[in-house]
Image (cartoon, rainbow, N blue to C red; front, side):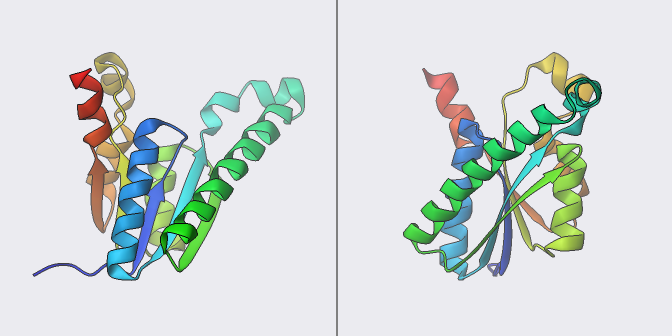
Length: 154
């Protein structure tokens, strides 16, 4: 039968694909009367060398931007009818961090991620976040593909 989800984690990054994943997560949360966690992971790989040079100022700027993004998502989710919404900014490699938070901190039974249209080359080198989460999560994963498909139609 149909799965009932009570704890839904959606990973957002400010992209169109992340926005579409967020909207799908909202609809799933409303249908299931589920708790929603909106997560943004700041990729520390980008800051490895910069932090020493600027004293962490760039990391602080990224955190402020992420917090503003999440505040907007939280407000929108509540306005659309999600009763329980949390937000979280975390640091690390996004792929592993999403799975870790879903399993160990939030105990999600559904993860929603966007299918970001990376180039073939970067996908081979790094693998996509969606692919990694799908392979490693111990719960259901919904990969939002609609925004990617629409992008190919134009």
